[in-house]
Length: 109
Image 1: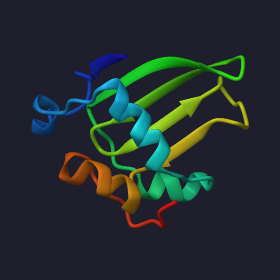
Image 2: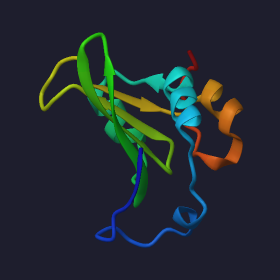
Image 3: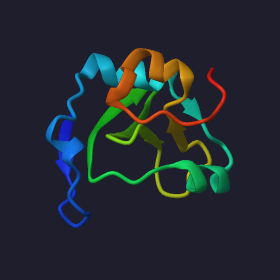
Image 4: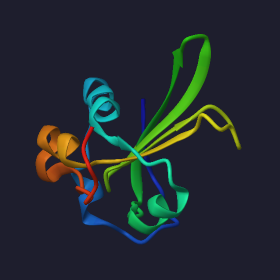
């Protein structure tokens, strides 16, 4: 698990305090809402200059993951893979993380 600060993006003060443990990353993916409509995801998802990323192996597949300070998550099997997932922190996620992540107006799991 690695913290990344994208210096090409505008400075965000929340990046100074954005911290996430491996256990919290698991909780994020258990509680965040998968958004299967790409247009809806693009409309709602807020950009963030900082994030955590890593690689996990599940069911024999290697996946890249990312969680941003804006409460946006990605699970990626590979470029263009139909199993790739985009997630947003909705109600259930917000109950776990409170004000640490942005909450989005979507149905919870």
